[in-house]
Length: 242
Image (cartoon, rainbow, N blue to C red; front, top):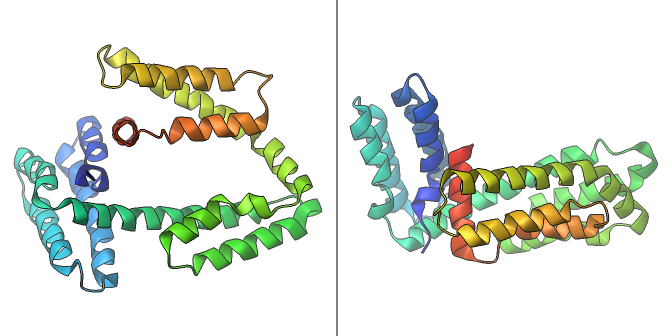
């Protein structure tokens, strides 16, 4: 079942509050950010989720007005129980669409910096990405974005792979550190064996004899485990840690 706890980024807010000298204001900042998102969703809604979005906004507005931190925290924590799984899935999709839009925008920025010797390839990639920005179907847009490199010339793909190797290695190392932190913090953590296996997979992928393609594949599998419950658990822990 889809949880609004991820949608609301509650874990992130509570971590920020714990580290802040003014936890109430830290939580208020989180609430303000979420309100901006929900108000945007409401403005673009076709009416099918109008009532739920209005209710969600009112809950967050009431939390923002509440002065007592414990009461404010209780209001935010109680959001999940007040909405259906269907509405949770709807809001999650809206956030995913926003994230995909940001990824496409970032990719356009990246290809604009490509070496002049591959300008024609980069210009084509930018044109394709700009076309994706006009797509309205999320799955179609996501698949187009994920498969963008399948349209590239082999020489351009090889250039991109070599250029991206340092980033891949850094992401693998960060993944290892993330898994190590989780296991060290709680020996009996849920999914302990699965997390240990992901850590081992990341460590193996960092070996010099592993190709860039295999490193990329391993990184994708590590950051997108097929077990949906494990994926949701790790996403929550990642939010808490950042």
